[in-house]
Image 1 (tube, rainbow, N blue to C red):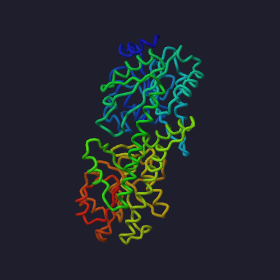
Image 2 (tube, one colour):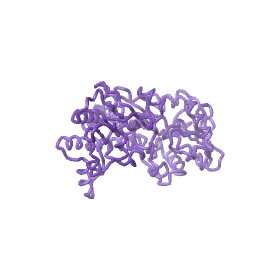
Image 3 (cartoon, rainbow, N blue to C red):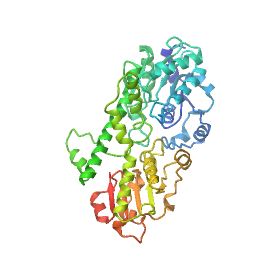
Image 4 (tube, helix red, strand yellow):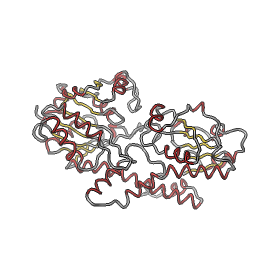
Length: 442
C-alpha cells in the first residue's frame, strides 16, 4: 500500500485506523473518528476495554456516545495489523525525581513495532520533549518490526489538546497541530485529522517543532498560574482579597485572566518538566519554568497551613477538629485524580496529625484508595465539620448557597468558629462576609 493513499482507504472503508491507548485522550479520538471511518481501539487494560465494549465510559469524556460507537475495542495487539494509520495516545508521566517517565511510550512503541505492516503511518500524540519521537520511538519500532522508517513506514506527531471535563472546547473544536517526517507523511496526516477536526489543523515543518509546541503551551499556563499564586500569597500577607485585585486588573484589555489555584493533572503539572529536562540535556538550566513549578507544587501545603492558622484563630484545637475536604480530582467536573494537588493538602494536614475526611462524587473510590491511600466518604455521610476545605470547583459545590454550607458545620459552635477554606474563590465575598463564617480564600 502507498502511504499517500491511506486517506482514500479510510474514507472508502477499505482501510482502518487504530488507536493505542484509550484513556482521557485516546477514547474521544477513537469515538470521533469512528463516526467517519473504521476504527480499532486498543488498550492493554482489559478491564477498561471490557467497560467500553459494554457501553461504560469511566473517563466521562464521551458519555452516552460510548453506547452507540462503532469502535472495535480490543486488548489484542495483533488487531493493529489491520490498520495503516496508527495513533498512539498513551500517558507520559514524570518520575518522583521529576524526570520524564517514558516507559508507557516505549511500551507502546514495542507493541506497534511488533504489529506493524508495511505502508503504515504512525502518529504519536503523547506529550514528550522535542526529540523523543525520532530518537526513542523510531529505533524501538524499527527493531521490533524489522521495517525501515521512511522506506517501509512513516512517522508523525500531533500533540493532543483535549481538555478533560470541558464540554465547550472538545476535540473537534480545538485547532490541532500536525507534523510528519517528510512532505508526503505530513500531507497525509493532515488530511486524516481534517476528517474530524472541524476547527482545522495547523501544520508545522518538523516533528521536533510540534513536540515543542505542546510542552511550551502548557509551560506558559503553568508559569502564569504560578505568578497568580505568588500574587495570592502576597495579597494574603497584605490582607487584601486576591479575587478583587484580579477583577480590577482584568478590566484592562490586555490582562491575561489567569487565576491562582492548585496545579495538578496530567499536563500543566507535568509537561514543564519535559521541557526543562530537554534543556538540561543541552546544557541549559531553566530559570523561570522550574521556579514556576516550585511555586505551584508548594500551594497544597500553603492552603493546609492557612486552614490550620484559621482554626487556631477560631479557638479550635486543629488535632481534635473535624476537617472535611470537598473534592480530590485535579480539576472540576472531571473524574481524573492523576497528579491531584489536593493530596498535598491532605498530606500536609497529616503532618500535624490531622486526619481529614474527603468526599468527591466524581472520583473513583478504588483509584483514590490505591493511588493516595484516601478512603473517600459519600457526601451525604460526611460528619458535621469544624473546618471545610472546598478544594475543587465541581458544579455541585459551586451551586450551593452559604446557608446550605453552614448546615454542614457542627451546630453547637459559633459561626465565627466555623472555618471555610474556599480554594477556588467559588463564593461571593459579600455573601461570605454576611454568612458570619470564618473564611479564607486563595
